[in-house]
Length: 454
Image (cartoon, rainbow, N blue to C red; front, side, top):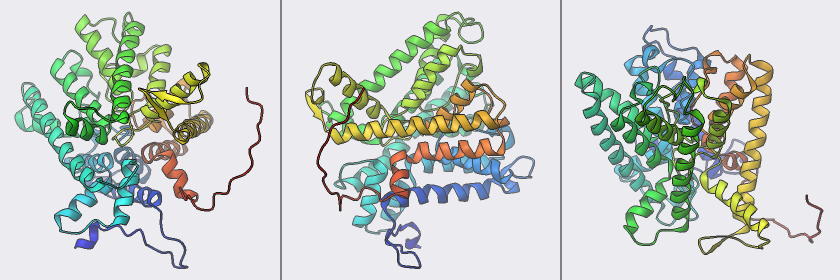
């Protein structure tokens, strides 16, 4: 029984090849959970009509849930049975917190010791610089997540019990709280949260859950442990960048859509402000919406594509290139403008390898998005802006759509599935999984020579 939760990274191939690296373990772990979810969602018990989903739709839904994206080919509330909905909920929770978090927690409950190899995998999963305190962080993530979700469930249950019977209000509150905190965007209402445009309690609760899930568990732990004392530079950058992006997004959304009769135009000022703030928060990671995305102006769509591309923060439940990657690149650009040899922020310099890593992540992300959008433009009957929006939404594990997801061809669904997986697991993790990984050995130094740039 205990061995169920042990991940052995010493697994050898039949021919005695090298052991699996932590990035490969993480990738295989996500794939395994997705495949199990696919098989279960294809069962007759998973759908209301008792026919189950086709394998491709089951795979799409399972990938979207495990990768906490929220893109759907069928309506979650009307197509899936209670079994199917609970299964999706479990896949979201496992995908959001990471299967290693669950494996570690159950291993601790069963009295098993977390060895060094398992700690290295956790380090890779949480994007930490060392294994020191990594098990403590895993326990904190598990406990804090369920505490935050518990508070969210209580608030939403009390609010929605005025409109629904208590049992249904509780069930819906649990589902949407888990979906919001894990930045998944799955809903049971059929039109996301459009009916709550003017509901202050629902809007604020969901927004807080999304932000807490998207800033990263290490930031939450750092802020809690310091309690007013000086936090780390990473936490400082994440918190300020998140706040700035939310503010800028809300202001621009408000101004751009103010007179659009299909979005904010017919709402009062409370509805306009709430919808602008909500969409600014959710467009970077979560995928919920309180307005019709397909009715947005092109400029607003472009703004949301940028926000989805940036995404959440490292070690969180969200995707995208991450806020710190964006900041590192922007700081590098500013340093060039100011003719500075160092990239600095808040009285500290950012190591060159960090900036190099940030540039590599952004470059690979852009290349992948261009490739997928180009291929979709060949196979799908939709506008290029809608296809680009869908691709970036999948990569950023956001889940917003301009209404083309259910009409994707088989090839289109496969492309979006791959994009959701890459967006959740991470470009570098995928690169290390299929390459030689971050092996520091055998790195010869070559003589330098300049080339002309610009």
